[in-house]
Amino acid sequence: MKEVANKMYSKKDFSGAASKYSAILDQFSQSISPLFLRVIRCNRAACLIELGRYKDAVPDLQEVLLVEDASREGQAVTYKAHFRLARCFCELGKYADAVQQIERYRELIGGQPKLEETSLYTKILNGLIPKEQTKIQQANERTTVSSYPGSNGQNLRQVRYEIRVFNVETPIVKYDMVPMTLCTSHPPEIQTKMFLASLVKKYHNELLKSHKWYCWNCPARAVGLVHTPASYLHLPEAQVIDFTQPVCVNGGLCENAARAMMDEEMRAVAARGKVV
Image (cartoon, rainbow, N blue to C red; front, side, top):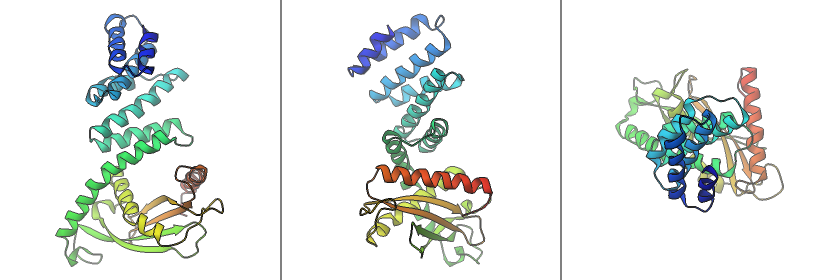
């Protein structure tokens, strides 16, 4: 029956496949192995996602993740469940939950992100950023001079945004505002990532058009920029340092190499316990 359901799914008969998977669960859930049960639930969730029934898919995926399985097959199901759950939460507008799932997926799977993952992560951030920008804009509208550093304001403070472009000696510096709640030694993780993403997005196009950039990894003209922002909002002078690499093709080999290099560098920095 599973093979029939799989074939229906491959032929894009998602409704029929979901019904077959449901029949397996109804008839055999008490007699099949835990791994097989997880596979069927995860597959049914995939069908429901394709049908746009994201809310219905969530319980199946959460059930899958309740069971730990260290086997190779079990881990593969876990990876899929985290990714599909991230997609569901994204489509349902639960972006903070989506971030947690996609980052757990990335932590488990390792390696270079594939296009599908990058696209989903971008979609999640694009959902988060407008909400965060609205909060910042509303805070700005309430802000007076007393909210700047050295005053008694508690809403916002100034942040130095330093953009260090690869192979460019002089950094580019911008100044913006950051919520005071993020300027602590242990700031809320999701809100901090949202702020960093919004800051990068705000200045990205201006930076890209400001210079005739060339790819960091080859002689070709650059058409995009890879950003790796590091938060130092807890310092006396709040700052964000954005390590930026021009790339010749968005999503191409040079971009992948840029991300791999920065991932390795950031891990090395964390291991040394000091900033770059």
